[in-house]
Image 1 (cartoon, one colour):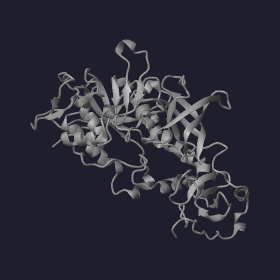
Image 2 (cartoon, rainbow, N blue to C red):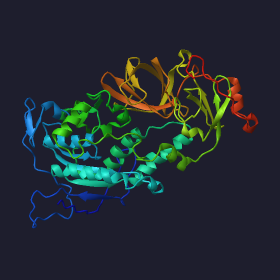
Image 3 (spheres, rainbow, N blue to C red):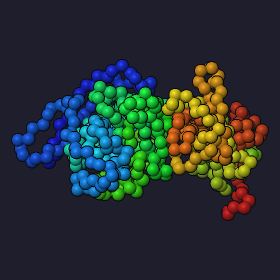
Amino acid sequence: MAKFIVSPKLLRLKPRLTPIVSLPSSHFLHYHFPKPTSSSSTASFPQTLPTSYSLPPKPVSPLNTAATFNNVILDPRHLSCCMPDKRLKVAVLLSGGVDSSVALRLLHAAGHSCTAFYLKIWFQEDFENYWTECPWEEDLKYARAVCDQVDVPLQVVQLTDEYWNNVVSYIIEEYRCGRTPNPDVLCNTRIKFGAFMDAIYNMDYDYIASGHYANVVHPSADQSNKASILELSQDMVKDQTYFLSHLSQFQLKQLIFPLGCLSKDEVRQLAAKFDLPNKGRKDSQGICFLGKIRFSDFVARHIGEMEGIILEAETGDFLGKHRGFWFYTIGQRQGLRLPGGPWYVVQKDVKNNVVFVSRNYFSLDKRRRVFRVGSLKWFSGSPPNHIDQLQCKVRHGPGFYNCNFKMEHGEDGNDDIAVVQLYEDDQGLAAGQFAAFYEGQTCIGSGVILESWDDRGFPVCAKALEIARMEDKSELGKPVKIMTKPGTLA
């Protein structure tokens, strides 16, 4: 039976180098050692994990031939994003899922000295009734089992406070202001490669690795002053450069992504070849910190509910009531509970708590192409030279838009603003989301969408705007009877 020794160790951090968050010295790492290779009762275990701990290096295998590791035959291409020509000390973020587990095994197969880290982030006691057991226990169980297979040490890092202060609280405030934030982008910049990166700074790891589908190209040793480059992964559907696009150059230089050269199908096949304990586990879905909590319940708990009205954008007709504008985002279709649809949220009046909807969301004359982006970050440190030959992603997924933009100074004169012009129409632009920019295969940076459309955006009629400003909306009486839209089935 595997024996695990838990030995808390106080983290002592160097002065901050990343402009994200700091990790208080009161936080602890919990260490889990791999099961012994011998069943002898006389086997001894160290009481603490020295920071210089490493596995013995493996022989370097040539990249032009297939190699066998633990009776698993690997194509050289499988290791091509693992820096197999070097021997590195790598901190591997392990979630208990298939992707990060395969990333760990590939790095181990490449001969690197790996230590796995499981990040225990947000958990809200008020929602304990949603769980029959702690949501992270199953993840940690799988993470330990994966590490046990190849005798890789596992450490648990407690980042609950950091996650609440720098991700969850920000998300709550953004929804309260009527914007739609992206938790995954924030988690990467502020937690996984922010607070965690700070926490292990003294441990002298060469790189931090994770199971993201992306590829980082680092400069050669004799050109270390040059910037590292974030490139698209092999799998365009799973590609996660969008979620990594707001990292700093300092953060990017410390990362490697072993899955950047593989497709999702290949990762699943490798999980089966490695006989991983979680090889049949489904991919996680939804917002990372919510677990089994419904998003609407989370929003209601932290922002509350306030009854408002729903108006048709084109006519001003009073169609029904809602629980608060913060439950809705532009383009949303679900949760409106209106007959005769489909209905879509097209605008929100935050001041008066009014939601405007339409059945003509996809009309040609109401599509948007222009929006503004702030909080810009460029991996090179400055905007690209050819701003009229770019591509843009306004959400995670394989779709790109050709675009151009022009730079403007913000109202305070400090924060630059990019006014982006898409060459095609998009209907799902929402303030608070990120827009990531690309030059070919290279992600060059990103920013936060400030306005979801320009003056040619979805029109809200004068009657609807006037009703929205009414102080006593009880004068509206009952909602109108919604008729079936012509040309649709009843």
